[in-house]
Length: 205
Image (cartoon, rainbow, N blue to C red):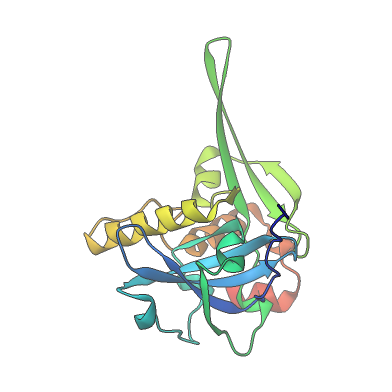
C-alpha cells in the first residue's frame, strides 16, 4: 500500500484558527510563529463558542489578552481539525512577541529530590532555544511553560482553563494571562535585549 503523504502546509503566521474543546465547543488561536517544518507558536483565547459555525474572528485580538501561549506541532492545522477562520490584518510580529519560557524540573537522585529551574529564549525562525539560564523556581513558574505540546494537550489545557473561568475559578498564574507575568519577570531579570528591536521593547515593556 502506498504511504499517505502528509498534507502540505496551508497556514501562515497571523492566521486565526478555531479548535475543538473537551466537553464541546470551540475556542480560538493565533499563529504567531512557524518554522515551516511542522512546529508553531500560538496564542490561545477565550471564550468558548458552542459550534464551529458560531466562532467569530475578531481582528482586535491582542497577545496580552491570551490565556495560553506555547509551542506545538501542526497536525490539527494540516488535517483541518483546527480550522483557519481569518487573519490578523495587518500582521506585525512585534505585536505578537516570542515569549521567554520557564522550565521547572524535579529530579530524584539517590532518594533525594532536587529542583532545577531556568528560562529559555528561542530563535524566531527555527523555534529552537538559543539561550538558557538558571533562575529561581518562583520566577520560572511565572513564565509560560516551556515545551512543545501535542494538539490534544492544548485542547485539554484550554478546556480546563475555560471551564475553570466559567465556574469562577482562577487558573494557575502561568496560564492565566501569561504575558502579564512574563513581562514582570523580564523586567526583573533585565532581559529586555531579547527582543528584536527597541520598538518591540517599547510596545510591551
